[in-house]
Length: 133
Length: 121
Image (cartoon, rainbow over all chains, first blue to last red; front, top):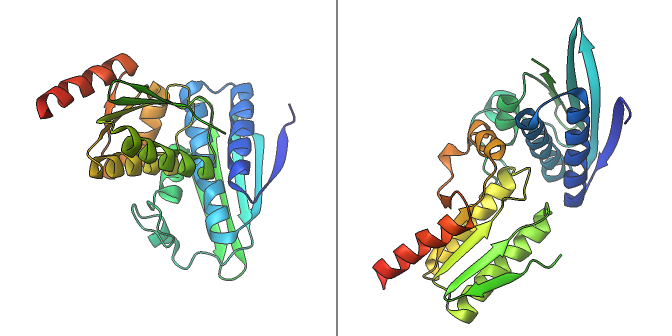
């Protein structure tokens, strides 16, 4: 298995494939079943956000190292409309798409680190990381 | 993807054996409700023990199936949620929107419906 995978997301079937790649890479990095489930679920939420808000985008999954810590990083990048108010978007139950409004806030809770950058009409990049304990 | 919907007495049993796309989940929802009406089912058990990932879309769909089946006079029980999936769903923030009856496994789910069916009948 490679240390980095770059995956295109544009259809609902891609979400299933991407989260399975994430599960395999997380397992290989040494994460247990619970963390694998957290990671794949976070990937599913973020990848679906790309489809819903931007139609298509990229998901990069890679193994990362910081000092003697090993982890997994997921970058979700799209060139969609961007997020108008990130604080609002991270609030539980907030939705602009008619969904549950769980996606971003949920993914943030499931992972150890969460960064989001968004420029209106240019796109959104979400980076999440989980470290092996 | 065709997911078989089995009928035992007046209960439908649906076993989801592979990860489903959003579209497949939607089709399944429709098929289940259709079958409820067709056979006059009073209960539905959905077994998701084979699912290693349940994201908010899947959870919302299960909620919708349960709510809609109730409007048809049928009760839905979701069974077999994996422990890691259960904890992940709680952390995801689902406590606000999860209103579906659950049971540990198929057997307990059927038991639950029998009791309820008897009571209401």
